[in-house]
Length: 318
Image (cartoon, rainbow, N blue to C red; front, top):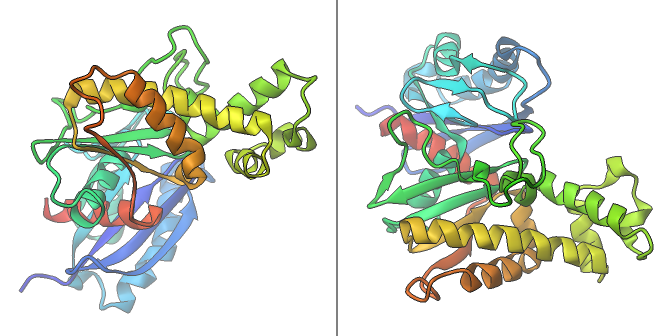
């Protein structure tokens, strides 16, 4: 008989989310731990085990599970390793699937975190029945999962689809983790929104803004959003600029792969129309006529944690 459960683990730059998934795609239990509290990955896995293994035992123990699926930054689907992830403390090549498998005694598969989110969207979200779409995750960083002809694009080495690290402003803002100048992630992530806020406040000290009430350490994408809702000019300009960068980038991605839809996913999407309207405007303005007004720009229908957990768990049967 087919075993009843799988585990889905989403390793994010800030938080790792995990859950127990049944054969119908229901998440029966889930929890989270901080990702970057430990300098070595083994201590992280110990923390994960302490939280996750009791959840496994509660539904009958490891014998009831088909395996564990994981999504992680720079996760290599071929080797089960995290390789040189810029947003994680663990540097170099980390054989995380092997380490998890030994710790839990369950077969473990790994893929890129954004690919896992795309799989969740394809199976359970707004991309159901779509064969051509791109998922863009807007969180601590910018990730992407590309589906063409119903298949995830992974490339010859497992690392295809790093759209967040494409250079969209040559010689532009320095990405602190990669050292690259002008990447999409440096502008359109939650971290990038914060950097834009600091830049605009520095460049326009004479202009009154609610954002001036915060220290640099208190400035986040969330505080920018809250000030924008109150009509703050600079805060709204920040989202307009972020949408411009993102929209121009999406236009390039559309002309590359001609998707039916682009699904935006992650914490930054909580900004809603503040982000969506300028993104759509600049996306359409930078498309050739044959691509204009054809591509849906959608926010994920799934809870952020759910899509990544469900997508990662689906790896077990892939």
